[in-house]
Length: 210
Image 1 (tube, rainbow, N blue to C red):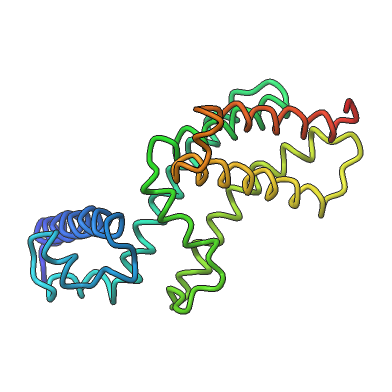
Image 2: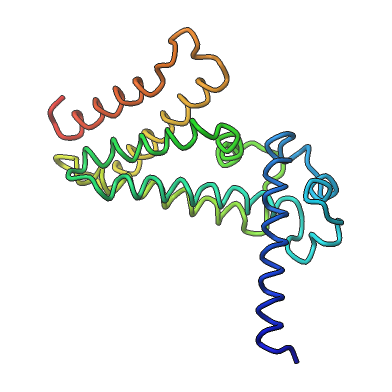
């Protein structure tokens, strides 16, 4: 039977190894995507054997889910923090939207990973409940905005608040994709301005001031 000290040491060692694997996998996924990655390439990047990965993850899909989950958690924290200090729902929506924009604008590789969630036609899902868990995280992010949309709307209709929140997030992601794919160069560095314009008009429409 292991002593408490030995258990704590083993736990810390396992956490450290898992952290190495996830950090190395993030770089591999950013470089070659989920389809191009393999347990072998991840192990090579982490400086370990493939056998050292399987006690922590059953396959590359599970590692991908862990990488994406960490990214989504960081996005939710940033948005929640930005919205928490707002004095009005309209300001919360603007601040939260801008927080997400800034996060992904500074980390385009993480945006590319997150687009997995929108690829409904992909031939191979992550499986093992991983897609559902990630969707739950995304739903949590959208719920933050749906609540503020409800509060900002003059006559809120609950099903529509979720649609409005999803439309806002979709517009935001679309702008980021255009910006980082170079397809918005003709407009210059104005993606954030377009986002602010869309958000302002959306709030005015919802509040009946449009």
